[in-house]
Image (tube, rainbow, N blue to C red; front, top):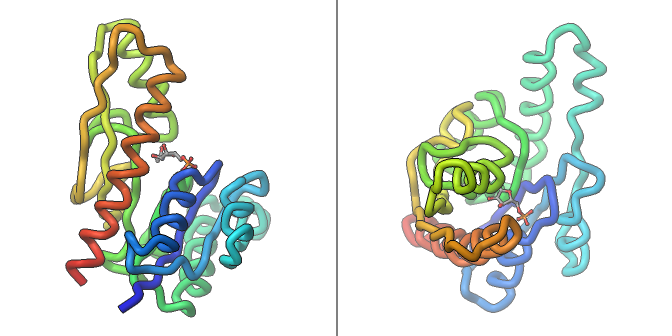
Length: 204
Ligand code: GAR
């Protein structure tokens, strides 16, 4: 059985690339049926298009304009519209690969236990969009000697929080720089994420 993945990304998409490569090589018995980006500059869309995978740009802006005085309602309207669009493709799994938007129940309730997120820190540590920077600052100011990577289910609006599917420690060596740490974290991500997705799919 070939599983159907919808991948959501906001940035460079190096993790999307790892997924696309793994689908092509057979490491993942899956195909990416849709890539969604919410930033026009997201290179992830180019990566999808380069291999013939449909990529759509869905920003929040029009929903903010529709509900200028009610940001919560704007989010829920965006989430419901995107969920409906994705649901049409009947994905087995929805993968957040650097997706910088926190879904409400208007999205998540459409896909119970079928949304997973990658985060460049260990469970419970450094939630948010700047986890590698946060770890680097903690290293410089407090001598933090490791950070990590995790993959977790997304059951609710908790930011980078949910039942953990996989995690791995990444050591910060004395001769690391901010850049070398980021490279180490990404290298671990590109393996751990694929293993976690493969494990998840095996359990389906
Ligand atoms: C990855 O490091 C991912 O863990 C992180 O965004 C990066 C995306 O990189 N996600 C978060 O910080 C979620 N809070 P990529 O676009 O090269 O895959």
